[in-house]
Length: 381
Image (cartoon, rainbow, N blue to C red; front, side):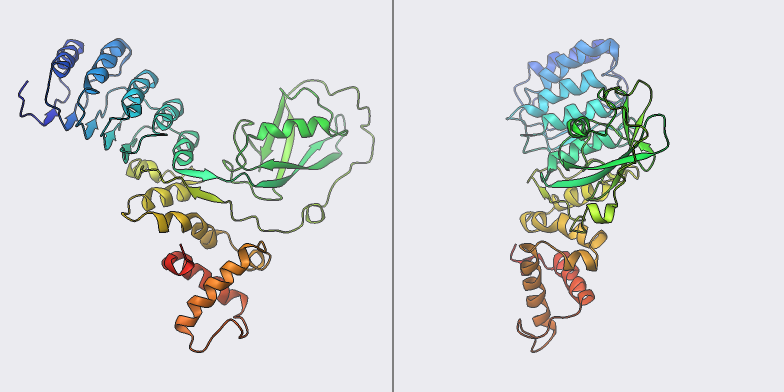
């Protein structure tokens, strides 16, 4: 192979034998290739699994590889597992991995995201036109570049009494970054909950069934959200023969006082990933798509730290924060917000100081938004 070769582009003409020959050439090469494009060669098909493994092993010896394009190669779980070895290599200098038009699903996304946990080089992994990737797969990448706090919220849970139309209800506590199945122990401990076997118990939010293994953050739950319990089949626990009892329905407004619930303390992890492909980042069925795009966009900037400190808080100010929530903000946070507002208003409002009467709530909110949106330096970040 030409020692001066820096770019390799072979499209749609490699068979299994061709991949083997290419792997052998790469294994014996002393000079590294920076750009490899092998689109449309079906290298990840079931018939070429071992061949693809050998190719990735050979490619991993090219320490100067910067860009790898494998568009339309039928790459699935096995192929992603092989690629994960490349991404986990601490000596890898790969910056861009293009995997459009493959067979990548949520399991593949989890494998790729897991391999990037300690990778500080890759900033682009293009997953466009992989229609099998759902919100669960995208959440793996959001978790990679963000951290969700362990804040506890309270949920209102209600269920029907067996053999009756009466409804029972209870307030449960759950951390927004922990699986919902952690609620199961609280439900079983409730003396009015009739099912000790949780295998047939479903949880529903707005009539949609939820996955017990997902987190409250995954479903965008906030303080006081109402969840229904449903049972597909199975007998209720005979230890609780209270079907004719008066239901203990709770008034959600009394059971859960109004509090700051719009801000989920989601922070940056200082990861380098800044692109998942244009179409992938715009997935409309992903609840946290705007949050994901905020992180990716901020990671494109040279000086990331100021943006990383405020971007998610800014997002929630823009979309979730109401006047009432601002007035009821945590006592630790509110003085900081007011101080930022005071400093910002001094710039545009001559003579205003901390001792003067504060502006009305809507003006304070507007100032908060302007500061966090456009002037993070004023916030002291």
